[in-house]
Image (cartoon, rainbow, N blue to C red):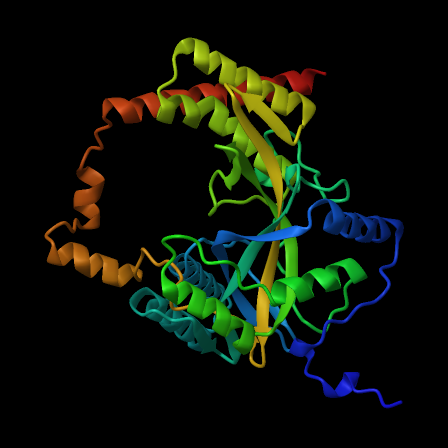
Length: 376
């Protein structure tokens, strides 16, 4: 029998190998169980964007944080180029400094999704997000999901995405291999009001980027509304379950009272729910008839012959490059120079002052909790 595996491009290959170690074995078993308990795969409306650097050894290395729109990632890449320019200047390499700064200035002016600077290739790349759904609702975090952060301190953890190399040649366990296969073929069912170009782009992506690599899972908050589970904020996710819990607790203590204009009694009820969430590190909480769940989110980056998928024409874009924004403000007569901006006092309206007070109360509460922990 002839073997053809070495003749197939890496992006079309789903490599599966036994995962070594008890933790890897447990994770693989949990992933297999999830296929049975949460069999339905559903797309999360908003993708995530990163900038990636092509590695000489193969694959593409991702930046630490993603954004919900491509322009946010282009701005981050421009900031990266400025840091590289500063490093070159400090090292006395003025030629490199000039080239990195030229790239940064170009990112300020143009919509650039791929660029080569001093032999290094960078690209704005796209990851789709999915959740598993079962009879009981969306899949919560798994026991094997890393969750090292202390309550209220999860924001201090390094992102698991930073330095992650998107390389289809790397083997996975059987469960993740099957998940990649499922997600790589996923197009999704059109929903009412969806622009037709989004469905067209999704179908074309399956052809142009038929392979895929799973990124580390992230976590978001889901809420059951009128009998249906929905993402509380589709564009927001956290690297750990505790990060999502901290975000939900902050919403219960600060943003819910502010946006819903709760009474003092209702505010106390929401604050008690947040306290329970902190104390039990629970993945679900109910308050005032509302039900929330910390939800596990799978992420797939599609891969084609030339690497990972970039932004699609139908992806939501509300921003333009920085210099274009500045010129628009100047054309509208709304531009202020730096001196004028610094000397103009900022006046906060009553609602903004109310939000400021709520955040100050929350910061004081966190400081008090931290102090109590030190004394224990």
